[in-house]
Image (tube, rainbow, N blue to C red; front, side, top):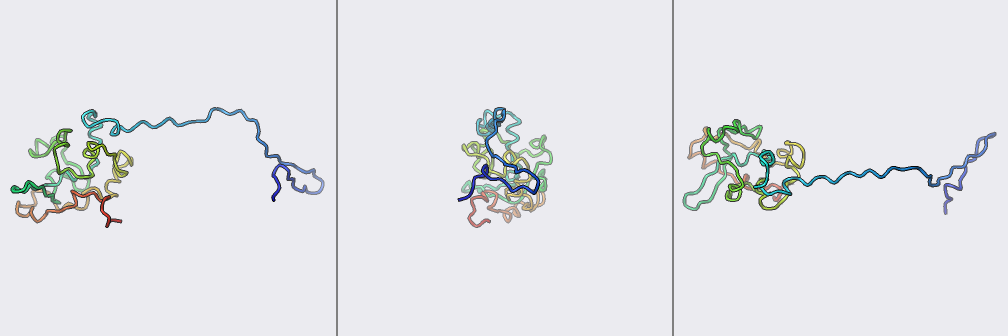
Length: 195
């Protein structure tokens, strides 16, 4: 029903000739379209844990701090119970070890994660990147390697920040039994009650 733009002309003001605008395809020299090279596949999708460089291995740690919480093993059943009590070296606000390079010398029972350990430790959190990669799964949106910032592990409610009741020297063995909690072994993303 309407007219085509190339056939339209505005009525010119008095004393001026009409201007006709034609919307035809102009022949313009164009360069080849710019294409973005495909992004390299992230190393955790290409490599198994055994093939990673030390830098790649260390970068997999999301800084949640869940593995730095004390765990209690039931002597009768072998069941592992998580607590909200952290290792003596743990900085609960930063969610980092306070002396990472010397942690094993200072805390003899500190577990050093290796590919073999990841395969054998049943208590690693379900959100642990080492565990996810070993299981052939991708890293979640909040992982610093995906999001580009360490803040997202806290924003997503994955880290222990704000949930640690204290460090191990603040509690007796009997008091540790009162500090058993379930959340370190849970994945908040799988909680249907969570917003």
